[in-house]
Length: 282
Ligand code: AMP
Image (cartoon, rainbow, N blue to C red; front, side):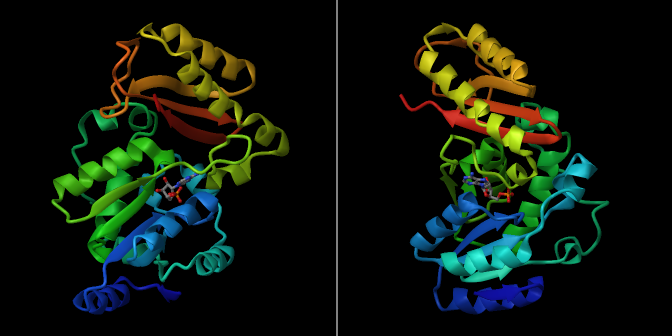
């Protein structure tokens, strides 16, 4: 694996590859890698393209400064895992490579309701930060294929919208969520859970699964309210647990029995905010 710290060096290298006709696949991450990230890298490799991974903890997408400060950094272990998984290139830039003019006057993106619903309203400015970093990274890497995780369902929608708005020639792949054996979605933030919190954490997955198992046409509010009450009783501070249209993310409180839905959830366990989602399969 070749490591690049400077955007211009990576761009020059990728240019020669592109001229040789080599397709480029890209997996952006914030590091503290786990099996979920590595699955994205394996999928990128399977596509037959040059697999480029980035590790950059993007300051502009953290609406909570203490979350940014506490974000785990495990770069040596990350490099070892990426080599083992067969990533071809790692881009590990300093903030000045991503934001050479600083972070004060970055572009504003019109994201419509995506910025008002769920993660959009709970984390003001978060998706602006996601667009700012993704726009810059996509501009540097110019990938043919982009691999991102369903774990961050709304983020996938935002980045697809960014690709559309910027008319980029990048094909978006949504990769299913990798879970621990007990159902907890893998996340870099899981490392910050105490042992007791880690035991409780799969309750989010179980609550979402129960909602989909019990879902019938008609009013769905008692199902989601019941799930929220259960999680609260188990010690979570629930931000939301809701049913929404899988394509628009508009909340769904009365199901017509046809509409494709997703359950989206976010809840705090202590100081750790966990998010997850589950798509209807029937
Ligand atoms: P992050 O480092 O949290 O920014 O995540 C980098 C990429 O990995 C994003 O596209 C995430 O959606 C994806 N990802 C994170 N956790 C998982 C998981 N458990 N399964 C699959 N993809 C994931």
